[in-house]
Image (cartoon, rainbow, N blue to C red):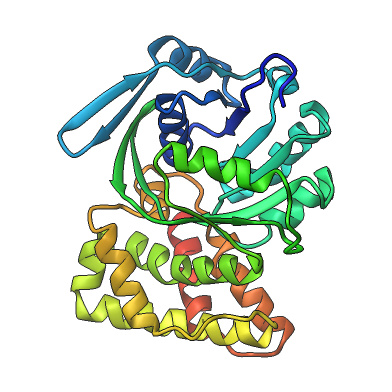
Length: 309
């Protein structure tokens, strides 16, 4: 437990759409939560103004301590890492320097390689991975819209039971998230990255929301082909994926988050760097290791890089 309280303390790293959403819902649930930002001016603004959470026609306002000072991590029990995948290395180095040695860190980031990068800095015993299908849209700094509920899956990379995992899962449940613990994190991460590889670049290129992607025959066909290609690569890589009808899976996910602009589309619209290198490009790199063709994922990778640089 944190040194200053008998209640578990949580730090959320990154005030993006999901970081803001998780921080607001944790605080609403009475969980001792702080939000760490790397930009001091924005951190000060959010600390003063608080966070606003919108869902449907309702809007709630909560105060969450926000700081750009990593020494504030000294009394933290759990960290939820929600920065972009290309920021993982720097964030992990900061956590290794300032986080208590007994604190556990969970990444729910998009893409492949985040867990490995974190383990290199923090060691294998302290890092958990996971996925979330929760939808969120950042309207402005500190103002987030909940665009669709989806399950959150967490687990240790080695599949070993950890006494700290269930208490953190309980905090997620307390904050209203649907959560499950897995003993096959690799399968969970690949299942999510396959969906991201299919949905995110197609949405970013067409500017369509998730529901529109599923309702348009051509985009649904492209997403399905992308997912099937990525799944073959995962299986060749030794990942034990469950039998999946990818077309049906994509329809289900897109319809459940119909109003969501996926994160890559949000990045493109806001002229930000995308996470394509940790998603489709990462899949292509693994395909190359096994000498498997990956023309669809490669094409989407190249198209997004051509669009965004």
